[in-house]
Image (cartoon, rainbow, N blue to C red; front, side, top):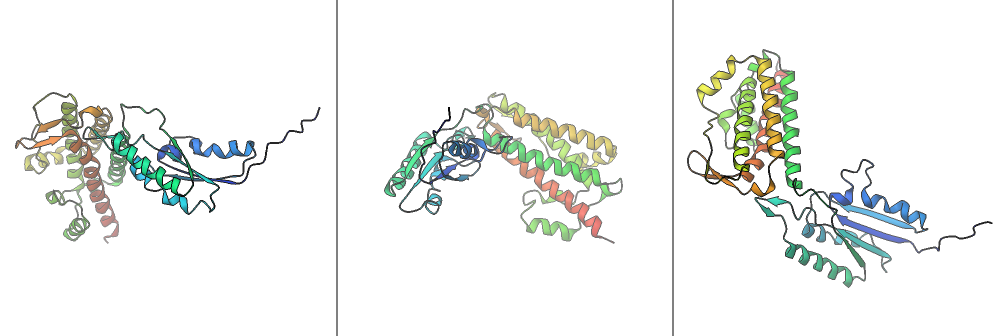
Length: 313
């Protein structure tokens, strides 16, 4: 018997999907995500579907809803299109212990987007987020990724330096160029360091920050943080006595411990505050957000040292 059944033809349909990394398919080995799987499903059902993936990583519901006008240029008039809004997972990321977007504000943003779409006679479907690991908010994953990326830059440059190169410093003109581009505004005294001294400083600061993160993560009240003066002359002088290979190995181990400490931070402790030796308060969240930028500053400094040595006759 011959099957003469054919899918009922559908009119052409355009669908815009507004959302975050879940819409983009971040983390999907096939690079499709759930949105990318709609096209073959539609084809199997005889639907002539044009699909627009309008996902942007790390966006919260208010930012996603505000991009509704992006859909209007893609949907014809009279409308034969639809809009899907998928959001929510980034709303729950904690910053200093508070969510990036409250449920109330998320609801208001969605309501505004729905009213706008209704005014244009466009149907909208709202899709909630998939289950997420609440022990590792996305903001922390991004922070760890940024820290690791700059640490790799440091490691790459240090491997390029010979025994002579690790004693190189930046020329005052190059130091001024770094400051002019916004680097080292708060600690310009470190600009005159040799590559060896930078490596020693990064090792010691990684040890200090790892200790501070673990102390504050414990949630204990009234935590006093140990003193750390990176410009202390006696401390800087000790770097010259350490074997270059041993110093790089010690730095690599300290950097790894620092990454692990950041990754293991309970999200509920980001707002925990400790006291600096001068009595000034500092929160765990402030320390965590400082780390990638600090690593970036010194990675840039090292890269300029290497570049300058290559350009000099």
